[in-house]
Image 1 (spheres, one colour):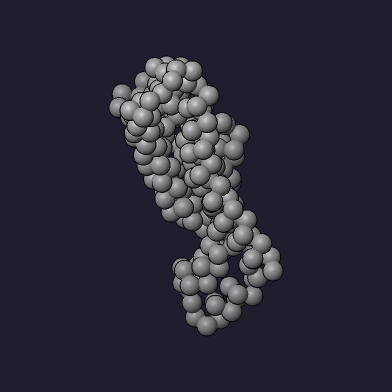
Image 2 (image 1 turned 120 degrees about the horizontal axis):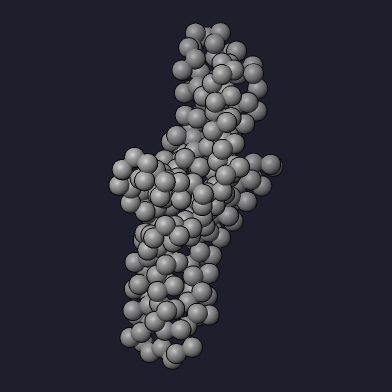
Length: 218
């Protein structure tokens, strides 16, 4: 390891913060899209139409069976080769993480809706609410309360999985760390910083998720 002075440390932290912004931008956009489309998908998964339920189940299983890194390669390398579309690394990452996250979020919402007592839907229907109103005013608010802890855990998974974007050329915090290691040969120090960064971001979320889960069980 090469000795690092204050100037070098300042450059290192500046570079890591630059990469961290890319990581957080990808993660935040992916989480937002995952929640929005996941709620919609969760509602669709509760459809009484067998064909619709089968299609949504296949969509979910595709993202559970095929690793995220494979989807990144498909979207970033294969689709542009086959279609001529120009997809940036960040764009491919957000698309893949959003599709994966919405599949997982959709399954959480589906399970939460199915766990609600049927009498609630029947009572809402008896007072004249239509299907959309029943979902909007009765089912979705309660379902979202139940999935918050699991949704937070999903968010931490998305954040940690963003480290894969380095494999499609995105200069995130991990790639910045690798570049710094090539220049300074300070592998242990840089990887320790990367560990600390991910820990500081993910641990509070995991801790908060566990507290919510415990409070809900009381």
